[in-house]
Structures are given as C-alpha cells and as structure tokens.
Amino acid sequence: MELFATGFNAWRQLQFDNEKNTSNEPRDLESFQSILKDDFISRPCSLLSCTFVKTTSGIRNAGFIEDIPENLKEKLLLSIAAIAWNGTIAEYDGHDTIYQYPSIGTRERQEFSGMGKIIQLVAYETGFVALSDDGHVWTWGDERYSACLGRPATYSSPAGRPSLVEDLEDLPTGKIQKISAAGYLVLALTDGCDLYAWGGRPGQKALLEDISSSPIPVVVEESDIVDCGVGESHIIVLSSEGHVYVIGDNGNGQLGLPDSEASSWTKVPLNLEAGQMICSVEAGRSASFILAKYQIP
Image 1: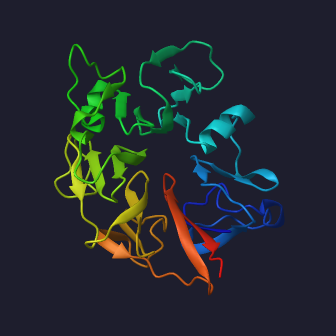
Image 2: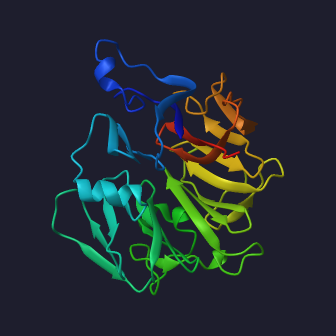
C-alpha cells in the first residue's frame, strides 16, 4: 500500500522519514506525493502538528507528536475516539457509553449512553458526531454553533447531549455508513453512495452552496461517492470510478492543485503506478491524504 499527501507541513507532519530531513526547513506539499509505503497502512489520523498511521510494524508517527497516550492513539485510528479542535475529547468504551473529557489527562468527564454500538466517532471544531452500527447519526456540541448539529436544539434534545439527526433516517439510498467532520462542516455517506452535508457558522464563507443546519444532498459531477474527508476549509471525495475530487481553500496546497482555491468540484490529476487503485481518502485540518493499493491480477 502507499500513502500520498499534500498540504500543510510546518511540523513535518507529512514526512515519515523525519530523521533524514532535520537539516532542511519543512515546506508545505503543493501536490500529492508519496510519503509512506508498507504492506498495510491504515487510514491516517491527522491532528494539528502530527500524523500517525498503523502499519505492519505498528504505529508510525510523523511531525511533532502531541502528548497522546498510546491507547488513545489506537482508538483514534479505529475512529472510536475523537479530539475536537477546542481540545475536548470523546471516547467510546466499546460497549454502550461515550466518555467526554475537557482535555487530555483530565479525570473529569461526562457520560453518554443509549446510542447502541458505535462504529465511528468524529469531531468538528466544537462538538462531535457518532455513527451507530444501525446507521443512526448522533450529534452534540456547543449550542452557539447549532448548524453543525443537523437538528434542532430543544429542551428535550439539548445541544450538549447526543441526539438523533432525524433528517438522516429512511434515506432513499439506504442508511449512513460513514461520517466525517472538521471545522464547522459535517458529511455523511449512505450505503448507496449519496453524500449529505450540513453545518457552517456566521461570518465564514460556505464551502458548499445551500449549506444549512439541515442535511442536504451534495452532487459531485453526477458521480457516486464511496469515501470522503473534510478539513477546516476543504473537502476531498473519492468517486466509484476511482476519481478524486476536491473543493475549497488551497492556501497550504491541501487540494493538490496549482490554483489558490477551487470554488467548484475539481478533479485532481494523479499519476499512480500501473496496477494501483485508490481505496480511500482522508483530510487533515489543512492537508489531504490518498491511500492506494495494488490490484491483485
């Protein structure tokens, strides 16, 4: 497998061979470049100053490694823990409870249960989104940014406690099978390869037209979408045809394009080796990742 990346690299978080490059000033990557090869590479977890993945030899780290316990790293890589950009942490216990902590290393916590088996837990700037194995999506966070909840904040369903996003129930193309979140935007992908989005905040330029506090379908060049990732101000998606499309800000090269931004969905030119196929995409705050593998003849 091979991991490609582009974008923000101030802490060498896109360089897994840091020991070979300590004499050079780190520079952002302006196009997708290969940063790691291994027989197995997990979906990367990208935080502000570091990136880590799981490989055949264990967890590999790049950049300035934040003070994150190994067991939390494992959960972050499994997408059953998440760190919001305000420092809050949510962690699924593997049974029926999500614990929320104000920061790493604190014992004070809130407990949320009753959501069933959680298969994915992600964070945006000021809150969290959880996906249960039966396709239900739950959101909670700062009520000042209620558009990210995708649901009304009411007395019975307050912003600060997980509540169901009812607009994602009984969708035409099946239940939700993947969620992604960052900044003030949340994405949800159905079994039938339809993409939905919601969020935004006052004073911030919207990444997508008609984005609101209710989930809306997102059309990407009339393609079925099989994977997605969202950063602070950009989105990357993978189509069923194996094409990668991006939209948003490109100030740090996170789109892998020569332009400073993409105001509409733009196909990324890629030069993969013969026999390689893209199996997933991911986004960091100002970076993008593509994971490719070799097709078996």
